Amino acid sequence: MNKAFSERNRKRCEAKNGFNQPLSGWSSSDWMVAILGELGEAANVLKKLNRVRDGIPGNKESEKRLQEKLAAEIADAYIYLDLFCQSRGIDLEASVNAVFDAKSEEIGYRE
Image (cartoon, rainbow, N blue to C red; front, side, top):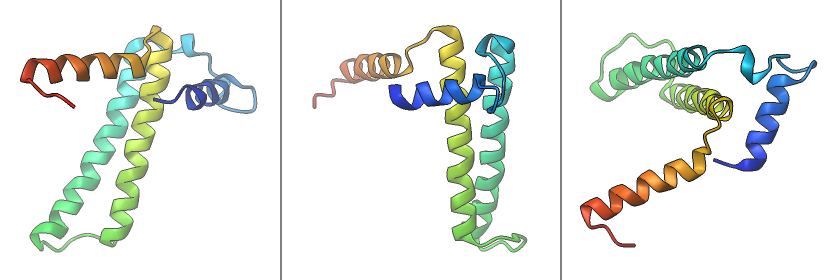
């Protein structure tokens, strides 16, 4: 939720030497499928981390490597989420803060 990152992200997406893809080149459902695909990959890594937690054999990668892969998959999902929000004209940071504040007020949380 960083405006500078969002600018870099969009530039790379649309640049000829980047992905050469205008935000409008994908529908909202295309962006959502990309986000969910990355989250699915993250879920698969979590399945493997659950094996580590539960002492079940079968992983081909170390726990450290799985943690790195999990972070990368979450980052991929964030990158797509940022582009999706830009394509829909959603200010992700403002939306997240508004929802957080509304829920905090609902449950009586005070900072």
